[in-house]
Image (tube, rainbow over all chains, first blue to last red):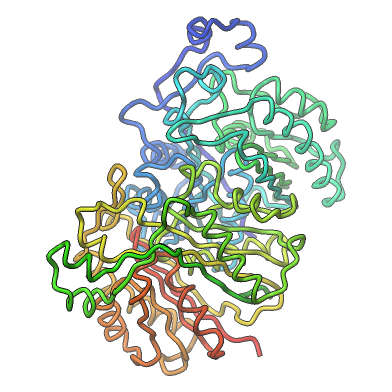
Length: 307
Length: 307
């Protein structure tokens, strides 16, 4: 059975000091540190791109795993801010940079903060159906490209990052149960308008609090598990305030749900893999992941350790 | 087993007379009709969008099939020219327009001319893995949005269209065998540069002639079939000249491979579904589809009729 073998990430070297930003926006520093929960944001500089960040994440993966490029049969890349306007699909550009073989399926997925939970299921099911044994799932959604520099709500929140997950037949974690939901009628809460991002923070907050805990409970029920059976809850790192409230509402023990966005901000589809990379070393037995945002879209999945 | 139950399409009402375009570009009318093979091109007008065209295709589907919206569990939309710059994913916008239920997975795929063959496998495998029974695969890639009005090679070639395929547990056709390939190093042959499309027609032509027939032969071999066992070959309608040569090189009997782009042009990921919609009524037993282009990416699949 296919599953997650390994994971690596990349944070661009460029940094924005969020407390200096707070001053510029005449926003309380304590609010920025405690409520948003972000002290510093990684930001693409001119030389950075979805492709270069993805390739850098892959280099970091190669430092952990011995990977034979000739064995990679599938590349899926999740972004809504692709290089070259998404034509060609950025997975093909990564394919070129890595020098992957021709017998390799490549496609992009357009999803935001639910993208990693979706992406794992999409790549695993596509690979399994087509008899593929080794593949790479990338996430990289540089919101810095679409931030309105006058909008403090988004400028203080979003960071740039990339991740890559190695999917293989010798996994450490496999999918046990998942659920995917959509409320397209609410999509205006988080959308591009022209070239810039618009966010209705209140609407996103209400959505997270109302719909995410319900889905988490349903996925637990479907898997015949209780919250106490889960060792680790990896929730999309939207903002500290949103996370704390969502965790509480879902009845999740706080110590099982890391909140760790102080040095990354909200990195969209990369937020869960950034957490997962750090937590995998502790070998949690059962992991629940939940991503939610743009769409509105939310997805929850339980992964169990392969013994 | 999941598979193709039904299919419908939409061509926008707006039209460009390709012979008048030929005159404007000082290009021989015979060349346009015989070599490109396109007399008239459907083009989006101001009121058209990926979402509106997809919804119109769905209306046409509803004229053929009785569809209970509450049963739709998955929507996948393939485009590289989305509305709202792809944020949110356009499948979520279609979800809103159709009034689909919350328990519905929605995501976009970024692929060009190979998108339909990929998309079928992606949606079917994702749905099967997640126990979903009814889903919709949309294609809509309006190249009119990115045409350089001074570039006759692309202006005379690309048309706008949309399609929707109903995937269900009561299919008429199911997937027998498929192959997916990528040559990212050749992606510059077809790419967005800034806001405009750039195409190296010669490079795309060479790619189609060199790589597509090889893949078709491999898929036939893997399925232990010969060209004569296939009732219908649906090749991406790139241009008449490219198609005729690719068909010949692949050893496909001409009468089994429709060339039908005179009134549509090259509609990217919608070209194969446009053909399939017309051919399904004739109930071919075995269909081979092959899409190729942007990426460079090419994909071939064999579908067999459910008896």
